[in-house]
Image (cartoon, rainbow, N blue to C red; front, side, top):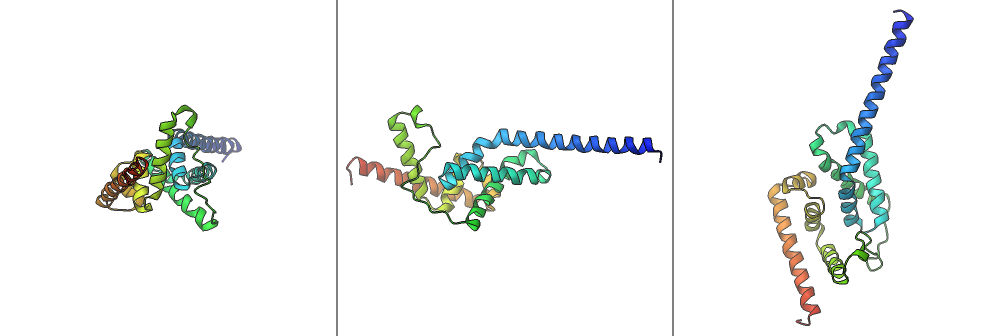
Length: 191
């Protein structure tokens, strides 16, 4: 093979590799832009700490970048990212046990300066009561309410039957309603 053909073949191969990298980077940037708010919101609900939530999301993005080629169906990207995030959250407990003081944790997710005092109070009560739900009920509810997943998608993410997910969502809502009603009764002096 003449030297000029070898150089042009090598140049073409290099251009193709660079084109693939640019395409991968574009796909990745689109994923981040489309799903960042949902991922952060879900991570925050899992750990109740804005800094840890940011770390979990960053670890999720790192793993997503490394494994972006395994994402074949772009429509499954959100579920794929949430699965990675759930696994990253589980890994943090494998690495290190954190000392949580629920009373000291402040909820910085919502800018309370923009909310009325009553709305801020209601949001705090809702978060407090949701935190009391068992994880088996809380997790599907958060995935539906915060991330907007359907029952089918939640079932796939949690490796559960759709009927199980629907039952857990129903029970989570009932338990949450009961907790909120008992709080309201206590606050109004009915108990």
